[in-house]
Length: 246
Image 1 (cartoon, helix red, strand yellow):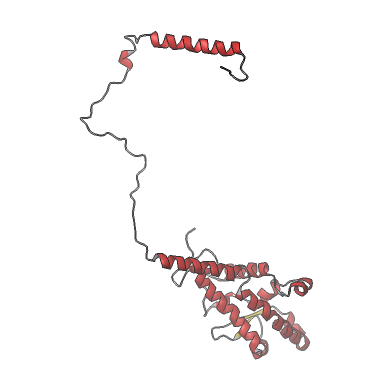
Image 2 (tube, rainbow, N blue to C red):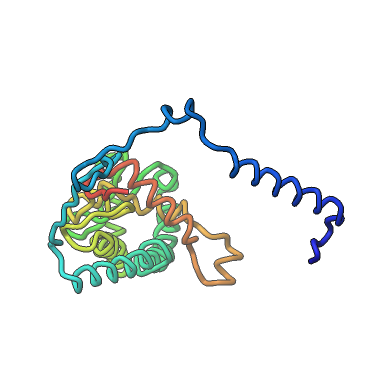
């Protein structure tokens, strides 16, 4: 028999000592002093004795309020919503197209009223679907800006598209009107308060691409900055109402 790298004399010594110990252990009888220390057997009259569990929690089986098909449909809706909201979907493209009209509008304001162009104000879509200007401006200044913005039906249509797509896909992200979300869908934003939550001018200005990138790829806005700013506005302005458990 080969023992690999072990020298023959070392292995022989180990085997000799092992066999000697076995003989000693097997030939030594139990002493009278040892016997009383052994635990006495206990007879339980045939009952199975099992130790109490360390932790016990009753299993409760409840019936889901949704069918398998409904659960699968909700998951499908969430996948679509995530792509639309965060990966440059319809809402982003509407804002990207609207930027061209916004730039024309701002050029006109800068030419006619440069001081007003530099003031801090914003705009969004109100309950009726019209462009509404926000900020600390005089009523005459707000009316002036709103009249120019609402004159361009393409601009208004694209702004409405941002609002409609946001509301549509955040509801899909929740899986329906009675659902919940961990993302944008958790916020209480609806057709009545959207204009108070999202400033579209800020959304455009913060999300700007460089002129070189716009010329190369044809996008006015950066999708990552767009998503980041919209999420930031929601976190500041909107109330969490439909949050799901993590």
